[in-house]
Image 1 (tube, rainbow, N blue to C red):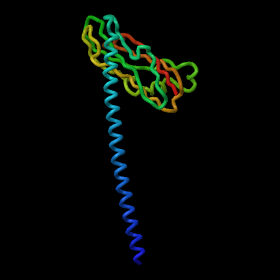
Image 2 (cartoon, rainbow, N blue to C red):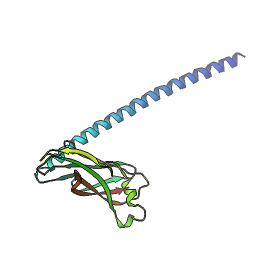
Image 3 (tube, rainbow, N blue to C red):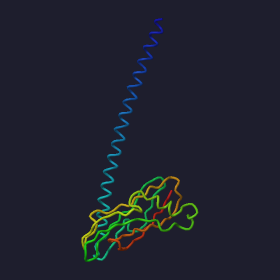
Image 4 (cartoon, one colour):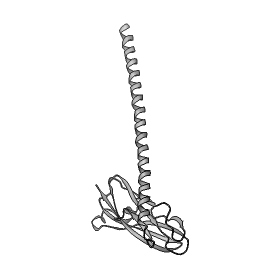
Length: 186
């Protein structure tokens, strides 16, 4: 009988120690995750400031209507990741205007057409897609902050090259457009 009590006592002490250790590991895990996400947010803010800086540098010519970063007009995103392009417009007209833009998939490389349709390519756009995004610009002014066109690439998305078009409208008329390519890599 005394042996059973001693065994029960050892078991309950062991259980308590295990619970305490698991709680410590859980708290440390939460602190670690919080610090990782905090660092990630600071990095995103820094990248945003750098993108904005680069776009401002590309608008040195007063007649430039559109600027895209990367300036190579090709963005490479690995399967299972997100990424995008920065885009900005300048109003080169003499009048203030109400502008909108939309991004549309316009072509998929020939080798991928059997596995990735244009609607599928359109669905890769996470932010800045086919709905019109409004903004106002005074004559000679550019967007205060660059627009981000963001893509979410699933791990099963085929490795392809897709051409997208950013169409800009001033009021109801086409102001212009610019193209860029998305290359999905492994």
